[in-house]
Length: 128
Figure 1 (cartoon, one colour):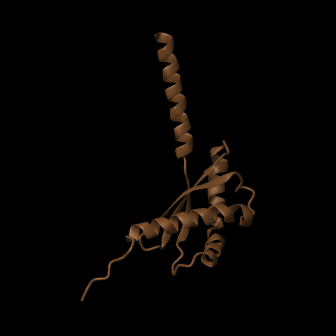
Figure 2 (tube, rainbow, N blue to C red; figure 1 turned 180 degrees about the horizontal axis):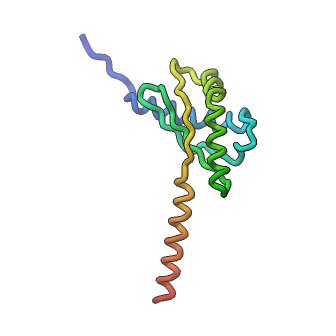
């Protein structure tokens, strides 16, 4: 008996689902989460486990205060059950992962590194 080949590896399906969750949450959060702490928040990425049980949702905030950023993440985690139920209605998959929101600081770190590089280049230019 011939083995049936799959058209796409399982990893690409997980990536497609993670991308769809990211797009859907990007639409749902501003419309459905009424908590005032969740302002200026962007979903920057989603990682789904291989069994589709859990999803890490990375968010960034344009706020400067670290406490306000932490408050936004806490508010999203409090609303994760509601967002999960909304995703269940949108996604056509058997298991919708539980959502775990985490703060994504890569953008802030990138800006800090850019400033350091600019400062070093300006210092080198003065020395030359």
